[in-house]
Length: 193
Image (cartoon, rainbow, N blue to C red; front, side):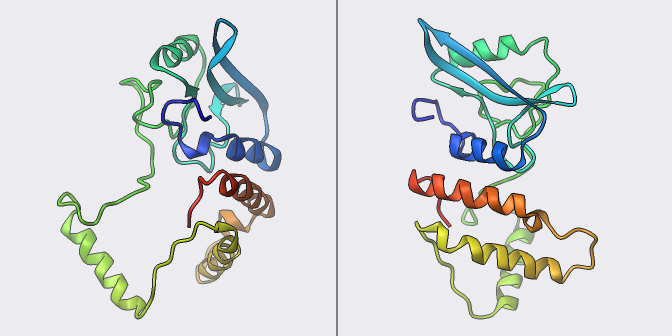
């Protein structure tokens, strides 16, 4: 992970391996690229319904293979040419992405100072901020203290909905996964609330 070119957080072993332990199914699949016996590329995946899919793609927003350079990424891509793939949430900047790839579905960051943010979005945010009343925003480099609060807020939000579902965090396996991943990613200094 440390040698990879711009690896997304969701490809960190602390995320992927804990996801597999808590939520995984299907058959593990790993495609590797080596030079002189040294690992230079890795696609952590699984076989699901006859297709190669990313590990954890059901709950991860930005996925990719791990590679040390574009040559290693090209080797992985060429090895996948004739495979049945469903690589959802592939990072648009990934060296694996080609013109046939659809962009991921989630925007993780919106710079409200940018001139490109539509005025209606800024207006809606300001309206919601007024409705919220007095509040503060906090960040923490110790996410472990915030995860139980996230679970509590999630429950409270879903209690207000008249829906059949209880939200993704209602599943005890998903909570266990987040607790495990939180511990590893926090220790690595990669997680912030």
